[in-house]
Length: 275
Image 1 (spheres, rainbow, N blue to C red):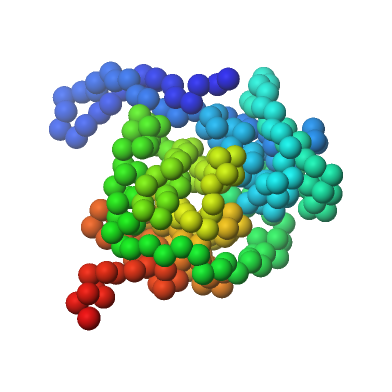
Image 2 (cartoon, helix red, strand yellow):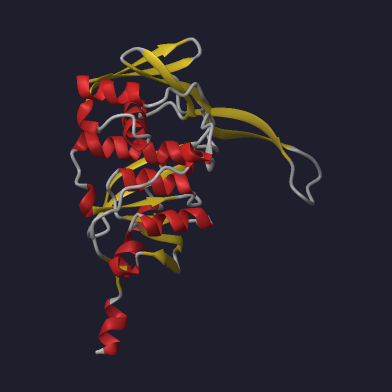
């Protein structure tokens, strides 16, 4: 299989330097990954070639193609043009996949809705989440701190996103990385499904801006709290509010901002002071 990281030469120039310096730089691979259902091509994603089965499973669920329980097997094979993940579905899953309009698309690492042909397709109604998990502000910050040392690919290349699955105590149970933020989240969702983790007892951290697609994927995975290191879009905030998702963004070492669902975020220090 294609290696996720390559070492490439470059000439580096710095302001004030007398000339250029020869360096070696670790860069992430980006390859075409075809997603098929029962050997019928469905989509092509540009992604980092690792955890491909996780990507296919997460994509299947977060794009509403079929339920995770309807995925019988995922077979990953190498082709001259890239990789193909063939998702084998149960009869019910195959029926669901056929009812979904087949998109012939080339998904790029910066885009999660390539191939969508109408606003109705892009802005599909989301289910409303139940009450779900409550966490303290300290728990959120502990998970953020833990993620700093769990981004192996990011530490090597400084060119990838990560998505992390945290439990109620802020412990990171899973981390997945990719050149695309949507792919990283799909990989995480797929890995959690395979591991049998309970989405109602977890929250997700993503090292990217929070666009609407990130909200949608989190909601469809059944997770009630999403933490993003960068800023959200206005549409992401509206959709999170409508789905009863707690959206926390601008999450850094010195704090975070709660945009929706503040009832799930506890502040023991403030509550103790008020008492």
